[in-house]
Amino acid sequence: MLKQLLASAVIGSSILAAPFATAADYTLKFGHLANEENIWNKAAERFKKVVEEESDGRIDVQIFPNEQLGTEMEVINSIQLGTADMTITGESLQNWAPKAAMMAVPYAFRDSEHMRKAVEGDIGKQIEQQIEEKAGLVPIAWFERGPRELTSNQPIKKPSDLDGLRLRVPNVPLFVDTWQALGAKPTPMAFSEVFTSLQQGTIDGQENPLSLIESASFNEVQDYVNMTDHVRSWIYVVIGKNKLESMPEDLQEVVLDAAQQMQSYETKLFDEDQKRLRNALEEAGMEFVEVDQKAFADEAEPAVKASLNDEQQKLYEAIQDL
Image (cartoon, rainbow, N blue to C red):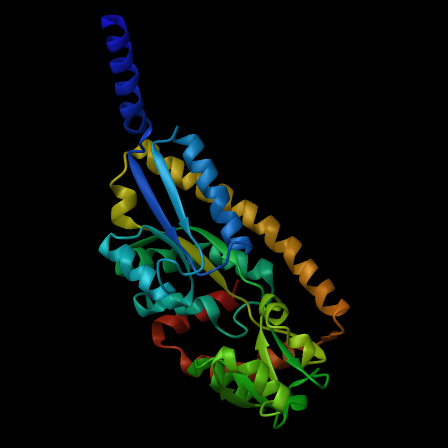
């Protein structure tokens, strides 16, 4: 009987101790706005896998897609307060770091390679340093966003084709000024209202990346995708500076290494997805139109420059010189 009691006690204490033996030393709460099927979330899942494996379970990564931890701005605030740890964010960072406005300036970049040179060179370092200093966030990876394209029910190849076109734009002064300079009639409007407004003829066109053109089913109310590529932008995966520095150096290295693996994985998914999106939209009946992008860029430039402060102007000029 005594042996049985002792055996039971040992087994019971082992069961109780098991969760504590495997508990992680650090937890990273990673919240973002994309849904589970989005390539950003798939990249986050890759980050989780690598971190947990390379840290031998000392770091537990918890992913919260679909704004489960709040909106983009709310999650940033939570990271600054220490109640969340990581997120995926873009030009919203300019609320703290003015240089981050360069992450979504019309016609700042000629193509993807031009943008990559900027992000991975001195310009990117300047932006990242200001984000770290002003916002308390450390950019550890970056993802290219699909360029914004113009949809319409008539082909648009040059700026004069825009004359009088009623175009929905986000409520961003720079976007409004740029499209006015190009000859359109920009109309700020909530994204949720765009489909119905196109359907009813309240507006004639809209501009967004291919991923949103597909997910919003704009092929049902628009015939053409005009390849303006007018905004090439990127977003950062950021971690709270205090959180990162609270970890021992070996675990910081694990996080940074996993971030680079996540970035490479997302780049592969992004390239595949851009091809898929074009094929899907063409199959849905949309026609892709080649546009004189230089003519658009030249006509937009005065409005773009006028919107930038001195600090941003210097970065813009440096980008053009790359």
